[in-house]
Length: 436
Ligand SMILES: Cc1cc2nc3c(=O)[nH]c(=O)nc-3n(C[C@H](O)[C@H](O)[C@H](O)COP(=O)(O)OP(=O)(O)OC[C@H]3O[C@@H](n4cnc5c(N)ncnc54)[C@H](O)[C@@H]3O)c2cc1C
Image (cartoon, rainbow, N blue to C red; front, side):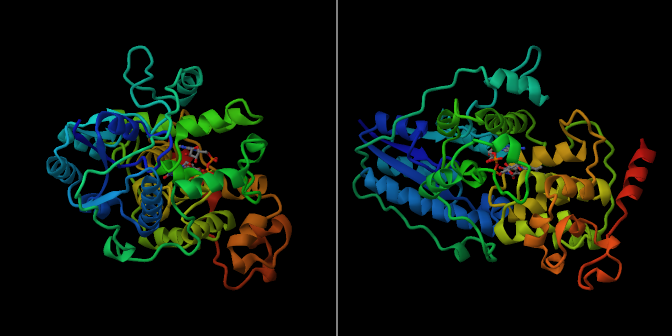
């Protein structure tokens, strides 16, 4: 039997790895290959995600060594490098995990690889309503998704072997890949860290009731591990299924698949509106900068934006409120917001990020595109005692209780270093309604 190559892209684990299992079965030696592709680094290589990726690859290397092989690293065009390695080792085939973005699909075509599942629970294209090749509305998708029979979880392969004499290459340092530093409180990447995080989270009990409670911080925080495939979403779903509170958590995992199948069917959605919508935006660099810096004068928006900078992560509720504020209150193009999220989010994911931004902007698949979130009401509802805001906005840390959400009502007590609101929310609502 000849050697086989498995090109690793977004499935950076040894558990439940269909491409690795098939490659190991097909060859007497296997090359688990990761390629640092300058084109991808240029467009999507922000320090937070690349730092997390390097952790993940170092961890994967250790796991592969324990199984008898190790990671092989190259730099260049991923398809070309994979082919070059295949020729070097006389490989009969290249295996890879099928992905959803236009870039991934073009690479897959050029590679002529054997494609396997592993990125999603239900891969794009596997579910479709009558008369279309994909779902545009989430609820019918979810109803099909939850009943759908999935593939079995794969066993971790053992007894791997690298071809003799192959130069394994080395993992580069972060500074050699991207300029800039990661956020100070970035989580550690990798399958081992992902399993630890899963244990620390403890499971979905109470998830449905507490997932929007900003101060409780009760969501799984598994998104970066799912984004890079350090954890298998399928294995996670199987571990969670049947446990108390599982249903609302599985529903969120289905959102991830839903976004993936939308991107696969609409490769231009990262840049173009999904639905015909008004596409006129305010070009306002000062307000955009105020939003990015967490200085909008709306405490919940500012708390979220500052958490994003500090941790490279924000809870879903804060993402919704900050995104809605940029698009609906400031009238700034959703693409500018999505790009800023991608600069910082450690889980920054083309499908989930851009689909959610379009949902918030009303240009995507939200059945109520005119929805506008009131940042103060959202704060009173999801951070009633103000603990989340005080955690992230130190200028307001001395204000107790829910009063922290309306600093403009504090009169002389309003901290001098906290900015007044950039815009009047009610004014923004009137402007939006007037446009309809
Ligand atoms: C404007 C905006 C941008 C977003 N950008 C991203 C992004 O770049 N990457 C990303 O992974 N998620 C994104 N999300 C979705 C969601 O906010 C995050 O997945 C979630 O906050 C991650 O935290 P968690 O792991 O604790 O989630 P949990 O609540 O524990 O959910 C479990 C998993 O389900 C998936 N998930 C949950 N909610 C969603 C959702 N609405 N859409 C798609 N998948 C979901 C994630 O993989 C998540 O890890 C975005 C949401 C909004 C509103």
